[in-house]
Image 1 (tube, rainbow, N blue to C red):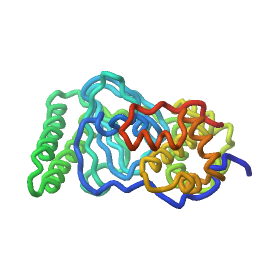
Image 2: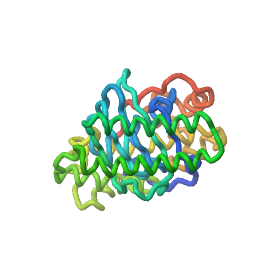
Image 3: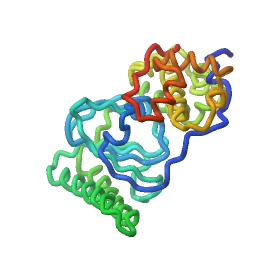
Length: 292
């Protein structure tokens, strides 16, 4: 079975692991000057709670795209395939926590739209309290943040029963895309190509591509490629691995092929992307011309 070379060989190096701490900060700081960190499909090693306070945007959760608006709360457990695009004037806050930091947190993605102003103020107040703790940097800060995270967990549980949950009726196509997203998170470093995923899911590649495009605006091959591009960019942010080693880790047959691939999909070479990461740089360009 044929397919893109970067999908044929397991990786031998991995992205840096984030410290197991609780964080609370504005959404804009999560990506900083590199929007690709949130805009490209990826899965994270931490739990994420996103609270939108102004503006609109779009989010992909396990392969299904939906809209974001003011006073939306989105919880994304570690391992969720996701991407977030916020409007230029949008504002939001983010709580990051290690998996299992609070046993009360949901185990599945959750999208809430609380209408009660008191409920909205409750979550805003907890987030502001967490940010004050971080700013003051006193002893036992992480313990205090864990306590606030438990209260946020209670808030989520209450709102699940009291507020509208954004869970539109799931179609057969949506269920298939979610299964594909879960398989992609688990196997994207393996030698599986898109046709192998289709076979695993007992559908044809054509059908898988069609339902993925309908659910999130990307074909199955686009999703696979985007996840690999994200991983490559994260690895290029580390100055230590040689580009040849990164290319090999992602299954490319040569550094030259890897360079052409990155140039094609980002508009820049691996060397240029690494230099940008080292200096902070200007915002990175969006993906262009994905390979089928």
